[in-house]
Amino acid sequence: MNTKLLSIIFIIFSIWSYSQDIVRDSVTVKKYVEDDKNKISLIAGLSYIDDSFGLLYEDKVFRLRPNDAFYTEFFLRYRWIDITFSFAPKLTKINRDDAEKGKTKYFNLGFSFFVAPKVRQFLYYSEVRGLYFQDTQDFMRLLNGPDYSGEGYLQFPDAKYRSYRGETSYLWLGNKVDYRSFTNMTYKPLKDVFVLSTGLFYQYNILSDTNRTIYQGEDFTDSEDIDSKLKDFRIAVRTGGGVQKTFKDKWYIIAEAYPEVYYSKLVDEDNLHEFNIGFYSNARIGYDNGNWFFGGGAQLNWVNSTNDNFYSSKQWLFRIGLGFRWGAPKFVNKNFNKLDKALNF
Image (tube, rainbow, N blue to C red; front, side):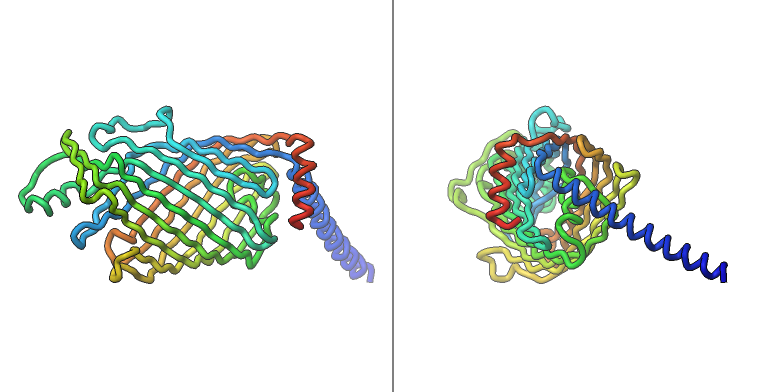
């Protein structure tokens, strides 16, 4: 009887201790989230993107690319306002082939926020100016015959590629406290988390100002093509999950994977549209002690297509960053307390 009694007491004590740990962790997380409301987070980092765009000419699509460069990237967050801003200054140039491929300028601006405990909204605008033809030789053979053997790249110095993107996600498993650190490094990972979500992704792209070209040092302008624009849009449903693992309360690893089904359409072209599949993934490793933090990661965004090149794409993004947190001014906290109360956040 004594052995049974001791076993029962041991089991009861273990359950009680475990429940106390859960309560303690919950209290710790809640306290951190409340304290974090009064802090500003800022990240400065570098990102590298490997990307390409499609250009339709005589029923064939050729690939346009920006010249390689690092983005200088910033993330700024205060409470539920999360802003991304990036560009590519001369300081981060990694190539010496501007004469061959032309110069490229970048600009990106993004916002993300939760409109409800389980509903997250993401809005993003990006612009790339200055592109070159990766398939220059194929294009020139199309114009001059199969025996053409010229060298160099066809440049579009005024070409502008603008992309308007958004995503509305619903968390089936998890909530905004669990998921917020998946957004970017401005949020400190607080505990081990597994999330499942479904998102509606939408994107509208405009490629314009391709009438001016430079090839082998000569400058050409097609005045008849001055107003031409290529427009396309894509709508996708993404469903997947993510895992967050913390180590010693300061180190963490995050990984996400989202298969998608999408519909793409080239505006003003009745025959260029399709349903197909794609895949989005994100991974990051970092350190965060609550006051300062750093990390690095990678993203892969792959889109399959039966319409060769135009919709098929593979985008790699590599990112590193260093950030700090500090207390917001009291008058800012006071006014946002009123705003949060009015918005019921």
